[in-house]
Length: 395
Image 1: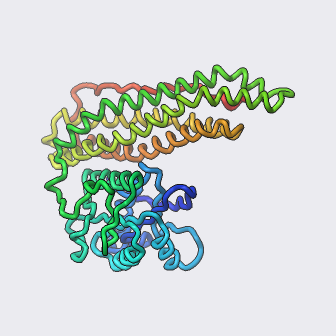
Image 2: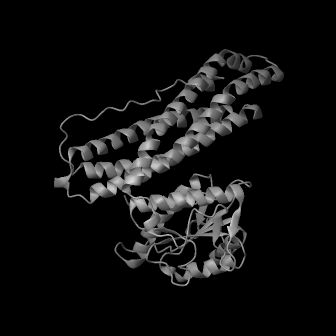
Image 3: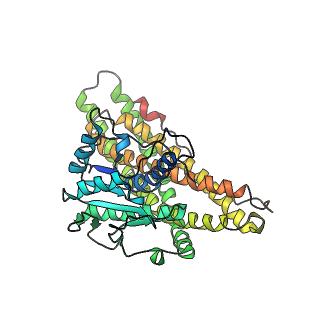
């Protein structure tokens, strides 16, 4: 799937969140389709969406491209400021774009870390030996690059980035996530990815069920405290009494809210592995002429579509509860910790939705050419039935 959207301009972010600037080929989104400038724009934005932004979301980073800077003023000065001050710079060095090489050199002069990514076979000769996360423009390769970048970011944020002398190229202190010498020979093959995906799939289902269980427990807590919360909101009730009621509710809801956050984060991380296997298998199916594809392939594609539908429905329930918690957290700071956990779960789960929809889109496209089914596919029921949460807002 090659879906291109505009670069997000969701900066600025919180003061405690590391700032992440992204440099790379930009192109021209207003150029006519089929022109070189338009091709560069679409290719670079695809890498930004599917590799950089997706990896950053795993660590609650908000990346920013130069064409998404919303501030007024001279754009060159703003780019220089970001290159000088941002905690992390990610550079797409594909094809050795002159502006990117200049910006990379400027960043290197600051002595601060920069993480290099680039298309295999299109790295500029003068930096080709630097440690670079390499990719090809296939779904499975882009997902591998995203996984590598996510590991580098995770290690770097946890332990600090190690900057290579005279180059500024950043590595996680673990040092093994990327390697300039590494090529596709070291990358996992289709069977490797499928085995990993199969191993993780059972855990993904368990994570979804755990999210459902946490939601049910929070709904039960809300129902149990409805009378007290409603009574505290009515009549001439002293503020101290209201605060005590809110405190009891907050204490009761804190544990399942934390469980929701933990299970959502586990779900997101496991889906990275599952996606890699699925996209690898999609690539294999695509390489087989439609007439030669068997019923097993079609059955697999239908299962992916059912999984996407189930996950989307489950996500709706998480988002719905998140909206309610966002309302009630305004009552008191006592509710902010569980509110943050639920909000984090919402962000994590919603970040997975576009990735699952990408799987669904590829499956539907391939299924259109697949052999007619000999029997109905196995139904996948939603592990997250709707929960009634409206009584929370009544208080």
